[in-house]
Image 1 (tube, one colour):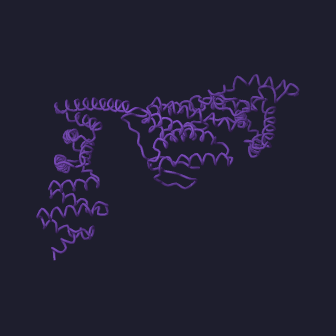
Image 2 (cartoon, helix red, strand yellow; image 1 turned 120 degrees about the vertical axis):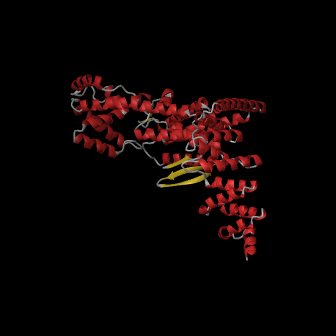
Image 3 (tube, helix red, strand yellow; image 1 turned 180 degrees about the vertical axis):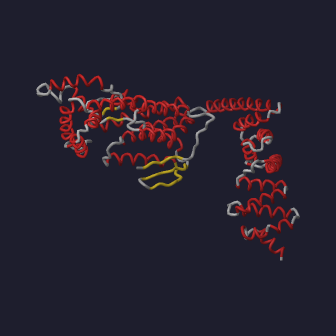
Length: 504
């Protein structure tokens, strides 16, 4: 078994992947309502079947049929299955045998057509009467009707090629597929849009079903499951990102690990694995449906990307302009709402309103300042912590931004409840910002906080920068206080050697 799961993206609940959620809901509804109803009805019928005259007539014929099928080359019915059914017959577990007979479509069709118990059989009249009494209790076929039939002469089945992608064989089969549908589906839905994404999903699923039909025709089983369509999504994902390096979690047999690969590298690995499993003769999984889905999904995404490249410069510019105008209008409306609450001094409403504006303009210093100033009235709120962190992450490339960060840091350190929550990376960036601002006392306070995490990769450079700035600003006593830490963390830095010589 080989799986590879991308860890690069997270769903955006600003524009939720509703089509992916809808597809998951439909699959679950079909399985637990219609297929589940059929299974429950079959279980009820099996209990009745065991107490009719039918098992004595039909079960020996069923065992004989299975034995004959198991002797054929490349048959999916193995001798172990025949021995299992013979054991059930010996124990008179006719209800379980009935459930197995329901899954053997060819035998059941021959049985109901009078080709197994024929008119020449002495028990034919008894069988026909017992069948007539029992038939109304049997469930109407659902799964076998809408699944892909691999019986000889079944034909193309375009409708079943679609409907079979919404059927599943077990709860584990369903849940496993739905996890992968969500993992790959939400990213593709955000890229393609709900309509095109749904179209690609269905085309990949139908293609996978028809492709599998070419290889499994005549095997006597049937095909179902969303895995072919999901394999198509997997191929679309890697073709979309092509040579971009994506972090994957992968598992091969019992070995698992993390790796960062160019996305497109994963596609031939997936396809090779599915082909290998098919030719190794693995039973119970339609590996060629997976291969067909991968092939269809890869081709669909490659065609989509090729058509997009042919868009004219004018079309691209017009679309970009339209998107920019829409975003600008949404931002203006969000700012207007937030400012209205601020003017009314309704800070408990202003803070979340400014947060929404900040999502649309995450680097706008004026919006972040307004968010922070509104949220500081509730110093234990998540808005206060998040607004502060957003300001601290701004690139401090102007004096105004450095002043904003310094003021915000002082306010945040004084008011944050229950305690400030700033990452080490942000503290290092703030220390560098405060050095450029000349806020030496606060730069040293940050260094005191960071000294306990001296294994941070930025610590030597940050400490050297602060000490060098102090020395240049004429604050030699303050610079010398950091000499022991410099000798441990950055012994080769020029400021370390200079302070060592100046102290002797």
